[in-house]
Length: 279
Image (cartoon, rainbow, N blue to C red; front, top):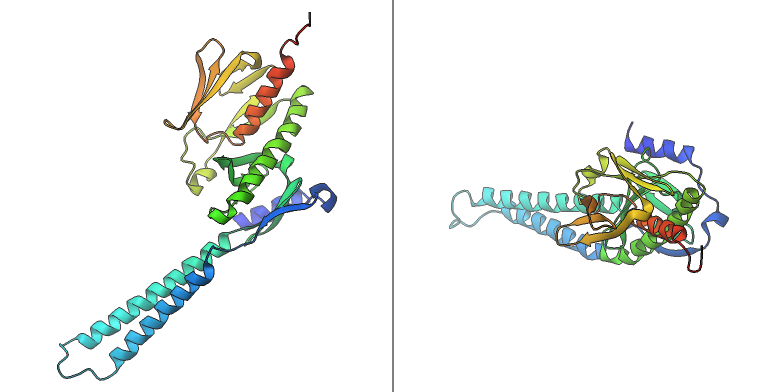
């Protein structure tokens, strides 16, 4: 099944939320590349320069010109034309891959070459983020990834998406955990988060309920979880036990929607901790 077919089937399986559920539009970034007009101008000038070289080479060369100069001129002109065409195709592809992103109070709508998708923040299961900025998301493991922008103009929108998802997804999963359900997160055991190819590799699951966090074959009681140390120097996140021992260490961005997991753990600990004056 192609990515387009997969996304279409996912859209049919999960009807888009209505306007009332989405709320008001709060931010947007239209599809495009910063300074695209300047870049296209440069490509056009390069193409014109290639044509100019070929035209000059087609004219009669002076008698003093070295042998083969005309063919060299043709070759240079063809290379310049090929470079300008390749640059134009690359820019066009980059623009096609850039999604138009519309953020609402409670959901997001993205439009790319595969179509349009609208989803509530609380329904986004997997969010890949970096420095409080959303990079890509998917509704479920069966849905395709939606890759977001990476230009500076988009950072404010992607930062807003990250925070809205963190807040609304955390509330939804916390309610489920408090009702006795087990909530699930996914993580990559071996990863290089910067590559899109990595996102197509299988993920493992970690689970959390009111009592326990389980990662692989290791379990820890929620009330025994201590600090979660984040080291930008080593690129690792470490979940510590309250006795100072290490429970689990993982790459910085291995766990998808990690900050949602962190918020739920903190809330569960606060809700389960003895209140002052209680017996």
